[in-house]
Image (cartoon, rainbow, N blue to C red):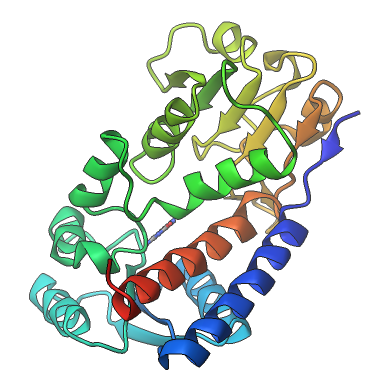
Length: 285
Ligand code: GUN
């Protein structure tokens, strides 16, 4: 039976360290890290995420500002808000919750954020820095996955890492991070011909496809580390990941639960990126 990776507890310890570092920064420079979260519309899942982010800020004594726009807001309104936040010295991190309503071009919004305040790591400047091996802000969920692997003591170098899912938010940046750590990386997606054959090669298997329980037990190599990034709502209201947990648990050496695995790590990494941005502004290099 696999050992269950307690992302909730690991994230709690990281938040505690961030709280102490932020207190030291405040003491030394008078700067309190500030995060602005912008939410457009009323998607219930997004509401929950935004609330969690605000709670986490409170816990580590960051300044947090929440801005809400109606679902029918124009792109120009959102761009105006971003321009204001870019110029606001109390705000070091700006996060626009995705997905955005369809009248707003997501890429135009991402590109309007000052790359130094882009704590999501989605701006092309930050993506490019990651690609070329000189990272700025790195996307929070992929960073959280690497942090979990480090905490359980996995030596990533030389391992076969297989990622299922090729999103800009998780799959692609995670592939770059694993590559930088010298893994042999495969990205699978909807057109991958023989998915089980590929996933069975994985020493490190990351499921980030957004398809409930699509990774079955027989797709997993004995002794693999299985990281489940999926959060899917079941018809009965419960949450399931992209991995069929009960089956996977019998084959993996380590596995993350849903909830309580990767999710809390994403928020801890967001706080870490905001602290790093505040530090750079307090003591520019
Ligand atoms: N929606 C789902 N995940 C994310 C994330 O990491 N950042 C933002 N901004 N929106 C999201």
